[in-house]
Image 1: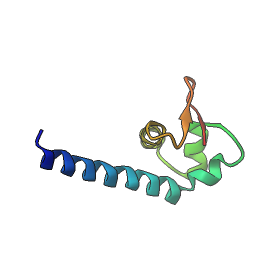
Image 2: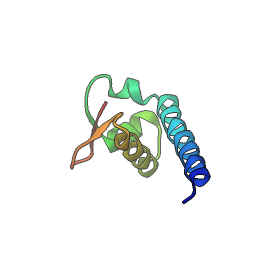
Image 3: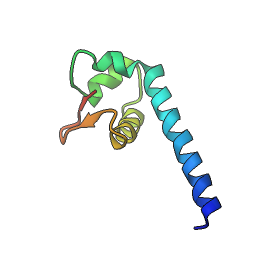
Length: 77
């Protein structure tokens, strides 16, 4: 990979991650986690989100350290 390609890839990745953070805020995820950890299914119902899509978003957010996921799909902010 050339330096230019690496720069472009980095810019695109950062934009994608920023969009994930915005999506979490738009859904109301911080408020939903304010009272403590919750199962993904419960969060999806509370936020009016598709559970599979929310799970994917949460994996991205966990990858950058904004939430934590435990083995039984509990989410903590």
